[in-house]
Structure formats: C-alpha cells, structure tokens
Image (tube, rainbow, N blue to C red; front, side, top):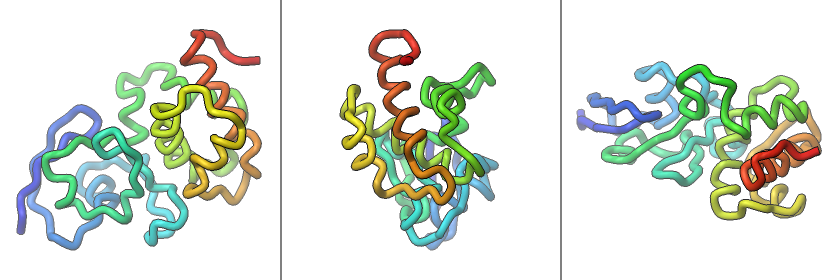
Length: 161
C-alpha cells in the first residue's frame, strides 16, 4: 500500500492507504474528520466539498493518494480553537442558511473558494459559484444571503444588514 503524507487542517498525517480509497473516506474513517459528510458518493451533490491546496474539490471524486504532499482544509479546520467560528459559519447561522445542515459543510467550503476569487459577488455570481452544491431544504435564498453577508463582513469588518 502506498504511504501518503497530507496536511489536514494544519496537522500533518502519514498513513498507508489503499490506492482506491476516496479522500472523503480517508478523512472520515482514518482521520476522524466527520464534519465532511458523504453525500451522494458520485460528485453530484457537493456535500463533501473540502479545499485541496486552497481550491474546492468534491472529496468523493479525489483519491486519498492524490492528496499526498498536499494541504486539505475541512469545515472543522475553519475554527479549530472552538471559537465563534469563521465569518461564513457565523453568516450561515445568522441568515438561517441551513435546515437539516447536511449540505452546509460543502456549501461553506465552496463559498470560501468563491469568495477567494470574487470578494464581492452579486446574487447571480453566488448562485453560479455554488451550482455544483445541492441543497434539498432551503431553496438557496438564505444561503446566497449568507455568502453575501460574509463577503461584506470580510470587506468592511461589519455585519451586513
């Protein structure tokens, strides 16, 4: 079995992995990063989205061996000290951008990538940026509002009305 070395949420892990193991399963089952859910297991829903070297990827479409020598950020890595959370996490809470919460980790991680590229997205740009992430509960309106609110907070330091 190949041995991989991967940085996850700032900590380095070395592990022997079977070449066919998906990154989402490695994160959950070997590293205990259960904040990244297994959704559809076919890269359709986006619930398992993480950042791989800063870019959002659906971790059910990446093999763990492909993460060798790379950096992974999960939703758990956004506030590792147990603080009040990342601005996106706070905005999702404040704007009621979740119901069952299953898609929320993936939505937040995809939103981070979107905001890295576009710190002031329009409503349409948020919808386009998140179109690979599905939510069956919310209707997306509050998710879009949360992403825009977090973007405004990051730009100005103030919570958007």
